Image 1 (cartoon, rainbow, N blue to C red):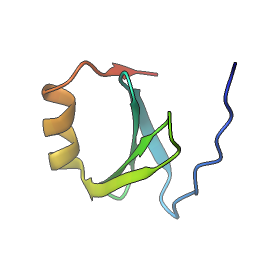
Image 2 (cartoon, helix red, strand yellow):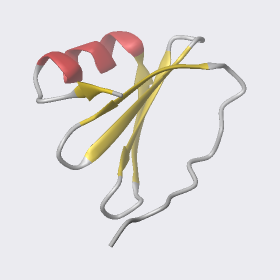
Image 3 (cartoon, helix red, strand yellow):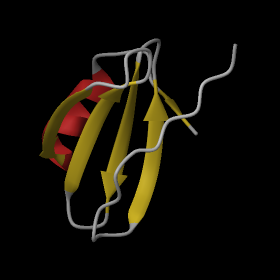
Amino acid sequence: MDRLYLIPASRAPLRRVFIDAKDILLAYANGKARVWNYNTGEFRRSTGLEAGEDMLANGDWVEV
């Protein structure tokens, strides 16, 4: 079954989107990143892009 989620917007423009086995990472123009679990719809964390880059380097992420 396909799922559809509405993820709250940010005031900053969305720049990049990454997914892995269970999460989606949204990178914004203001230097922030948000991580959501797309199996549960749970908001996982908000972080800076540097910490987001660390997550991307240590996982199996794909840019969409």
